[in-house]
Image (cartoon, rainbow, N blue to C red; front, side, top):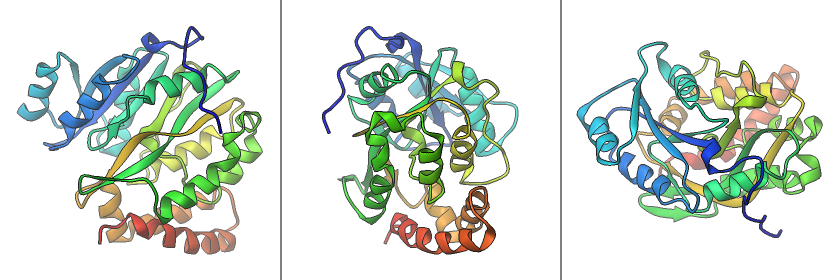
Length: 275
């Protein structure tokens, strides 16, 4: 697969894009995330949003002259993500997670695929994992997700509701922090506050019903950090994820089929646990 041309002078330029960094507590990785966004080949706006304002977050915002917004409304993961989505006043927004880091090509690649899509709903990139300071470019979970997403390497499938729903019906292959939303094409979009972890997969299921494109690039645009304090890792340990997986899978399948798919999906997800 050839890499897509630069974003150039298409409908969406870097001025149309915002990174909304979702900060919580006193993450030792927040500054590294911010620096990776400042180091993009194409510069766009960066803001910090938080529901836990503190000296650590405020000092980083001040150090890099970034606007900081404090969520005083709905709490929880969905509340924080909805607030971050709302705070971005540009047509495009990426909800960057504080523990992750982005490659220099992320914005450039996302704008390129968005400008190649007739009516994009969202765009997302492939990703690598970051474990104990080391980049993991391939493991069982990443291989499974890349296999699931293979049809979206072909542009003519981006607008197919059937294809993307079949992909999502087998598991959540879309890495949330790699997603850029096209707000103007998603009126009324929000994350539901009814789960602890799978609110993103649930959101993709709902958006997948809409007319428009899921633009995708198979070139990694970021690294998702896996560590003991991450929400995903803690939920996997608590086995809460299984219940939520079944809930989303039932949006696509009858209960008995959802149970079978969840059994195999869970085996792949277990590679996300730190050993």
